[in-house]
Length: 451
Image 1 (cartoon, helix red, strand yellow):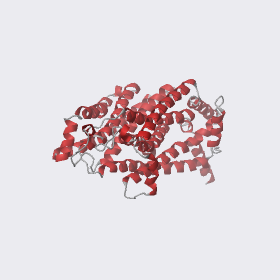
Image 2 (cartoon, helix red, strand yellow):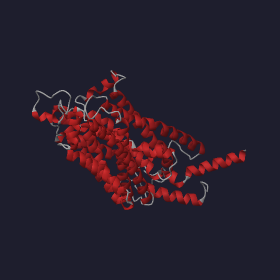
Image 3 (cartoon, helix red, strand yellow):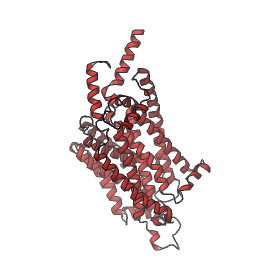
Image 4 (cartoon, one colour):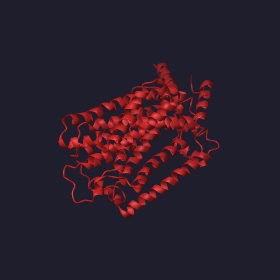
C-alpha cells in the first residue's frame, strides 16, 4: 500500500472523519465549560479569602502544618506519571495496543503536572514569596529540586503530547469545514508546514524517542524527590528508606486508574467504541493489577517492618492507624482502594469497561485518601510534647474554605483535559492509518533500489 492508493485514502478518510468528529464546539461542551468556570469562580473566591485573612481560615496549625494541600500535591504528582508508564515504558518496548490510548495518557500527564505546581502555591501563606525559592536557592534543599523536576516533567510531557500530534494536525487542517475560523488558523500554524515527507517522519521519530528516554528518569526523579521531602524529616511514619519506590509504585496505581476513567469517558461520549475497545480495557486492567500488587508489596514493607520493632513513636503512630481513631479510615482505604480491586480484577468479567470503571473510581479515590493518610496522621505525634496550644489544634480538621481551594485543582485539571481533548484529536490519526509505516517502507524500498 502507498499514500496515493485508493485503499489508503479510504482508510485515512474513515479514521480522520471518526476521530475529528468531536473536534467542534457544541452546546453540551459550552454548558460543561460554563459549569466548570462557575465552580472555579466559587473556589477562587474561597482562595481570595485565604489570601486576605491568612492560613487561619484553614485547619492548618502549628501541630499539623501540612494537610489537604500537600496530600493533593503528592496525588497530582503521582497521577501525572501515567504518561511515562504508557508512552515511554510500554512504547519503548514496542507494545502496539497502546496506540489509541497513548495520547490520552499524555493529556492526563500534562494536566496533572501543570496543576501540581499550582497546588504548592495554594499551601503558601505568602505566595508572592515563591520567587525567593529561586533567588535564594539552596542546592541541598529537596524543595528546590522538587520544583525544578516538576517543571521539567511538565515541559517534557507537553512536548511528548504535541510533537507526535503535528502529522495529525496537518491531516486535520484540511478537514475542519464548519469549525470556527480560529481553530482552522491555529491548525494551519501548528502544523509547521508538515507535508508527510519521510525526512520529517525521521526527525519526528528521533525527537520523540529522545523525549521518551529523557522522561523516564525525570518521572522517577519527580516522585523520588517528593518522597525525600518526607523521608528526610525525623518524624514517625515518614523517615523511611523505601519512600522513593513506595511513592513511585503508588503513582502507577493512581495514574492507571485515572486513564481507565478517561478511556471510558472518551469511548462513550466521543463514540470511540471502534478505537478504544474491550481489548484495551482488558489489557489496561492487567496493568492495574500488576502495579497494585507491587504497591501492596511496598505497603507491607512500609508497615510490617516498623510494626515488628514497635519503637516508641512508631508504635504510637501504628496503633493509631491499625486500631485507633484512624483505623476505620486506614483499613477502608487499604481494602476498598487496593486489596479488593486486585481480587476483583482477577476475574475476567470484572475487566469489562463498566465494572472496570467502578473499580478504578474506588482505586483513584483510595489513592487520594492514601496520600492524606501519609501526610496528616504522622504530624499528630511529634517527638516533643505539644504544650500551651488550644485543644482543637491537636486534631486537624479541614475547613470548608480549605476544601473549596483543594477542589480548585481538580477543576483546573478538568478544564485542561476538556480543552485539549476538544480542540485536538485524542487518538492518533496517522498512526492508526499506518501512514508512518508506509512512508518508512517506501524509504526502505528506495534505499534498496539505490544499492
